[in-house]
Structure formats: C-alpha cells, structure tokens
Length: 297
Image (tube, rainbow, N blue to C red; front, side, top):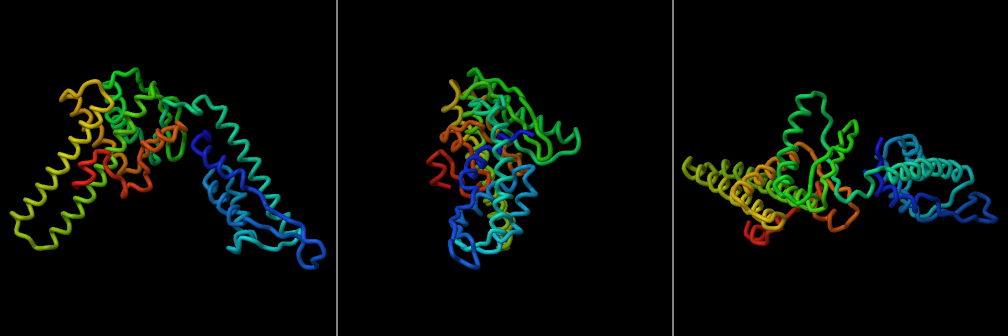
C-alpha cells in the first residue's frame, strides 16, 4: 500500500489529534474539562478514508466525542480513557503511514503525476484506458521535445492509481495545461447540452433548433482550438498545425476521461504546480486561462 496520496492530510491532521484536557480538582461528577473538540473532530474526519484506520474511526464516532457538537465538555476518567486510548492508537498508525510515504522513492518527486481511475475488472477496459493515456499524455510530451519521457513507476489496487514519471518539470506543466483545458471543455460541453435541452422545450422550428445546435458545436470547436493554441504557444517551441491537432485530441481525450471519473494530479508539493491542475471537486467553477474565452463565453 502506497500512502503518498494520504500524506498531506495525515501531516495536517496529526498535530490536532489529541485531547486538550485539564484536570478539575474537587469536582464530584467530572474529572476533566476538555476543549478544542471541534478541531479534534475535524482532524478525525480528515483521515477517515486513510486505509487501515477503519476500526479507530468507527470507535471514535460511536463515542461521546461525536454525540455532541459542543467545543468544550466536562468528562469522567472513563470517558477520557475511552477516547484517549483510541486516539493514541490512531496516531501510531498514521505516524507509521507518514514514515512509509516519506521513504518511498517517488515521495516529493517533482516530475511525477498520479492518475486515479475507477476500479476496472477486464483487460479490455485497461487497454482502453492505456490508449487514452497515450493520446492524453505521452503524445503531447513527445511533441514538446523538452526532455520529458513517460515511465510508469507503480500502480495500486482498488480504485487504481498509476504513478507516472514524466521526466521533466516542463512535462508536468504541459499536462497541467491539458488537464485545465480539458476541464474547461467538459464544462462548456455540459453547458451546451443544458442549453440544447432547454431549446428543445421551447418548441422551436427544426431550422431554428438546428441553427442553435450548429452554433453550439462551432463555439465548442473554437474554444478547443483556442485552448490548444494557447498551450502550444506557452509550452512548446513551435505551434505547427499537426501539433495543434494532436493537442486538441489530448484535451478532448482528457475531458472524456474526467467524465468517467479519472483524475490526473501532481505529486509535487509546489503550490504553483498544484494550483495549475484543476480541482476535480469544483469543475463547475473552472474558468479558461485564456481571458477572452473566460469573459466572452
């Protein structure tokens, strides 16, 4: 199991995974006053999807800690033991997973991305994804001719994750641009589909409806072409027509992959690199990096 994908949330959660506790001398009903419980609950929820901590998470959520939303509470010694023991067990596991991640050969690799795809069960599906990734990643990097090369480093089970070395930070920036453009195209396609469905409810004449649909298709083609040209001008030392066409294929392919639930993300800790990839949880908010497209459409 590779814990690199969970490393960031683990290091964010660990400092707050503790009971902030003060002894209450002379109190006959309660032994301690605990505080900052909202922060503790947030940290527990943050690591709830980390593998192999299911039992600790379940036990904590069944405890008094999650039976209230209060930020402060008086508790007994038994209540303290119930939660504190489980938190310590959780911390031990998370600290171990953190160390495992940090000793991995791809930890902090600046030229590496991860590709998360939904679980697959047949070689036919795997081959389809492989062909798509070749169009989406390998071909544009080869076109870029900037020292990049694609190497599969490892893969994980379940919702499959591939770790891919791209050979150069410039190649990572290229894939970031393609992913961002693909997210824009996906959003524009969704908007066009919604508009088309709305137009059909207006009982327009066939000629008028056909004109609207044709205009939507033309607009999408123009946006796709503009996105490809922008990437070529920024990331390549040339913008030959065949390069633009291959970039358009890459962008369209990634847009379709995003529709299927695929995520392409950097392993780099650099904030600028991370922000250059789309937030797949907020695709409806994404805007084109090309100002005239972002403002006119």
